[in-house]
Length: 423
Ligand SMILES: *Cc1c(COP(=O)(O)O)cnc(C)c1O
Image 1 (tube, rainbow, N blue to C red):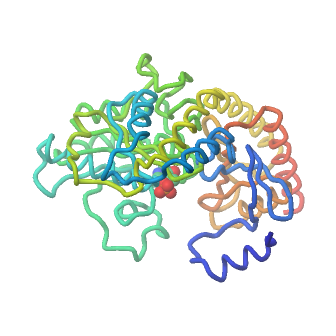
Image 2: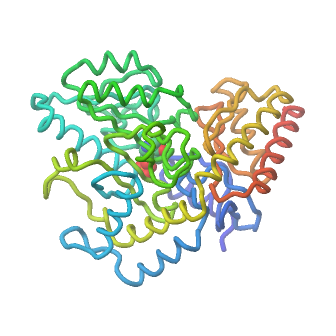
Image 3: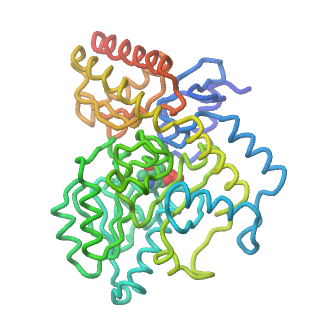
């Protein structure tokens, strides 16, 4: 096996420099752990941006991958396959929608939701041709395609990639007054939002924000579109972040008091447990049926390998009660961090829901403090990554035990306290 040093130098020499990774090379993963080529073990507190909620190389998901990999992998949608329908029914039942459009990456699913929303706007709402608008939020992250970065605020993601796709209006996140004004424009077809803004630094909106936003959309005949690519699939302590405080296994249709049901639900990342790129848009027939044969698609979307992997990944979420575990461990994590905060001047705030949490560091976003802390955490056996300069996201796989979590909070405590002394 090549060494960490060789692996890094090969990537630097031959790869595009479109990422700035922490200086660690991963060669193997199992559950909450990853190992470098030299055999050092780490707790993974990023989980590939919440794609690996079920833990690395989950045996049930890998077994589905192997079985289907030896049977049939790709047919294209030119033909039916004998797994897609079963998968679509599974998703519809679990999340409470009538139809699914299967894609591969998160950005593709967001693009799909945008296309469905625009087409619905013209054909159902009667928006004049070419005028449809979609309301989005400041500091959003929805992916990297040319259309999606057109409505990003992140200069790095956006600059020099124009000309930009028109048709998006931006409002402040967690601000229903601004949303309400924007929705008065009769050409608005949809409102696209993250239930918690992950990339922006785990920004948790006010308790009633999503519910109020959904109600405003309904009043104005605007589709309410939730991007749960990062927050969905048990990460925040319920199956979906839009489930509010409910921990039932499928999106709780029976308890609408808890559940803010979007018109379009976008899933990705943990939909496959991080094993294979699988994404989906779920909605009801009255909306989905604007898409007719030939109008949208993907060679790999809905392939039998993806479908089997995703069914296994979702079964794991239910069988291992990952939402309940994320909720329980999240409470312990934030309590431990609140207590560390009182002892450590570097520690500004801790926020989050379930096992999607972030610590804001008491230093400017331009400082290297958060990065240096992540390097120190790595040296102590825990991997996390800064976002926006002075925020560190903590999002371990949801298969973690309470004992492992306490080991991790001890590592974080030790690292922060010794860093405060030396730094
Ligand atoms: C990761 C992410 C995406 C993009 O997913 P890709 O698979 O990287 O294209 C979109 N929206 C949110 C909220 C995400 O976290």
